[in-house]
Figure 1 (cartoon, rainbow, N blue to C red):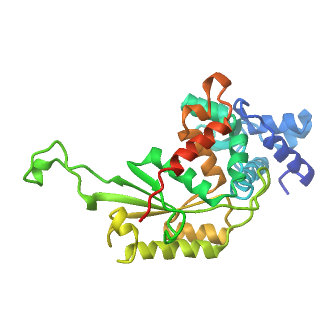
Figure 2: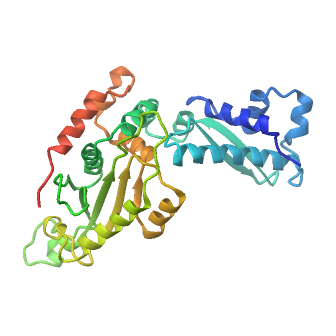
Figure 3: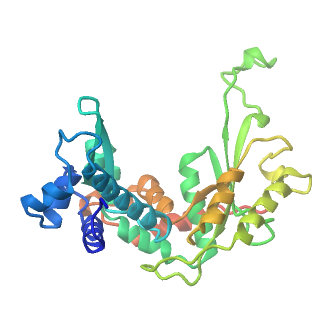
Amino acid sequence: MPGLDNAREVQLVASFDNIGLDKPEIELTEFAAMELRLNPSERASLFPELNSPPEDERRVTLALSAASLAARRKKLLEKDGRLPEGVVFMRSSTLLNSPTYYVEGLLAYLARNDEDPLLVGRLRHHAAVRAFVAGIGDGFLLEALASAILGNLYETCYPTQRSFDQGIDCVASSQILKLHSWCCNADVLPEIEHLGERMHIIASCKANEGNAPNGIPATISPAHVRELIGAWLIQRSESGLWTRRAGVKLLSPLQLLLVTTYRFSDASLSMCRDLGVAVWSLTEITFLICRHAPDAVFPANAGFAFNQTAMETWLAAADATRVNV
């Protein structure tokens, strides 16, 4: 049957794990031949040439190798909670009517696709950011982190009080649209906002208290996901505390958000997706910190190295904005 033997597949995956963030784009066939130290005869027997016909069974070997690397990326992201160093992607050739697969270091790929150089520089230190986030065992600190990030994304945002918050740990909101007052109000003003035209983001946070900074996170209980749905239902009712503080009404548009340093089982993740619950786990939080943290957290004069002290200062400022209801 087509495909690499088990030992070679393991070796190829290991090489992909250590590809290096700055590895230039390289065709997967070339990468495999180099990393597996294939001689010309072995390479020709396993992998197709560029002009090989689509029905060439060696193309199956190539596709299976690409699928193994894609599966490895998926495992690192979803199970281990880590950002993989490499990417694997495909380009289709209309001339040859067959796909060609490539691998590339993550930062090389982002830079080649015109990603913000500031983000690329910060992502070089993603492992240190991930270790910090994974080591958060204090739920209140995770709430402050969610609030700090949401505060950069939306007009208003605040973490809730530390207890009796009906399961809501952070609330943010943003206008859906702005209307000029001359079309809907007797007072002529540059703009007028209507409370019912806001979208509300209701976040619940769950920190893994026993998580090791460099370990694989434990799985979150599906029961907590169900608790989040119950908290959402409360906010839709007249007993919801945030109907008073944030103006959440019966038909206000809401986005549920679960922020956690746990990982998700397939069933829990499927439940969230089916019900429209957004999820920030370790990988998403790592990315969002690199994207939205203040410059002091990633000082340019230090090569954008992660500054934990500045990170803690940023979170303390967000924690100080807690509100009572």
